[in-house]
Length: 260
Image (tube, rainbow, N blue to C red; front, top):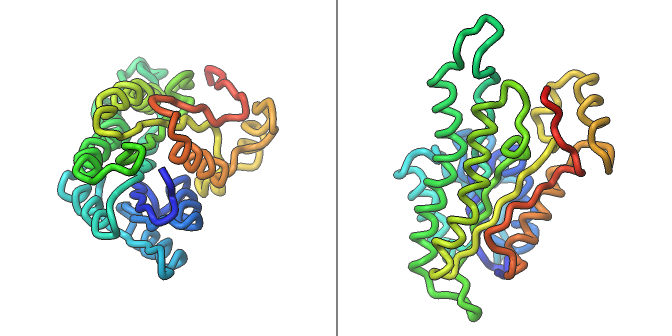
């Protein structure tokens, strides 16, 4: 998939990994649709990106759990010349709880379900609707119609104490990747995923210095947090390397989470 003059939809594209991806793909010649609930940040990102004779940047406000909102974002991408790339960055942790708390109170069921909805169901909703739009397009010369990149987490492999909801949601994305790739192979749509480790997004700016140092010290090499630009560069590779399909790539400096 060539990024130049393609159109990419980035969910959760107003901040963090999504914003870094939007900037990177736009810089490579792709038009981007930033889809996010935060209208102020979303409008700011597309204003920064601007437009050229070949590329555009559009913001669509909405929720990945809403079929109507997601279809509006897909329609916006289609209007820019056809949806070829989707990066499903929307997600996050809703809270930290153990299966049983220290007082033996069970994990809040609504919190667990909400985390699964935001991360796993939201990613699937994006993929199913985007795949339908991609399948309706004419294939490129090699038969490819589009590429979907999910965002998992290494918490889906070795989640820490208190991450049972978040780790389960991201494990679901890991498990979904190969199956979705097989489901969509006949339509010429590839599906891959990235499982980031500790990447220094804006959220880390609020963390105490000692916490930041602790996480950095656990990364074997390079001994630092990852940079969002490194995530975005991996998105580029997953999109442009046409033989990568059904694969989950860890981006973590070889870290493995401790139990706590």
